[in-house]
Amino acid sequence: MNITEVMTSNIETCNLKSSCGEVANMMKDLDVGVIPICEDNKLIGLITDRDLVIKGLANNFNANTQISEMITTDVITGTKRTSVEQALEIMSQYQIRRLPIIDDGKLIGMVSLGDLAVSNASNKEAGKALEDISVPAEPTK
Image (tube, rainbow, N blue to C red; front, top):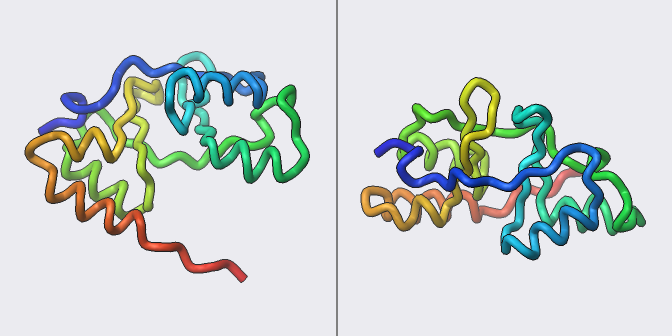
């Protein structure tokens, strides 16, 4: 099964000039924990609810602070040719719960572990990926 069959393709995005408050409200309204950051339709990063707390609030940033200071730019992605099985492998290997799907650098969709779990062909693999993703990271010294 191809990833385009299970991914969400209508993705809301922000840009580097978006504020923490705008992103937080978007996450609340959409009931999501991650927002892709795009410039000219090209994926340049992600911001998560955790980024807003750990990189934002914990550093005394306020609702007006631009998110450019706290996004993740080293983003693991899949392509429209990625299979469900390959996506599960990637997500398991990198311990990520969401995988942006790109085509020629442009964001075309997002797949979550939940999307993969509900696809009939991947229930067992999704369970294994969740197990791998949920392994606690080793503390850094």
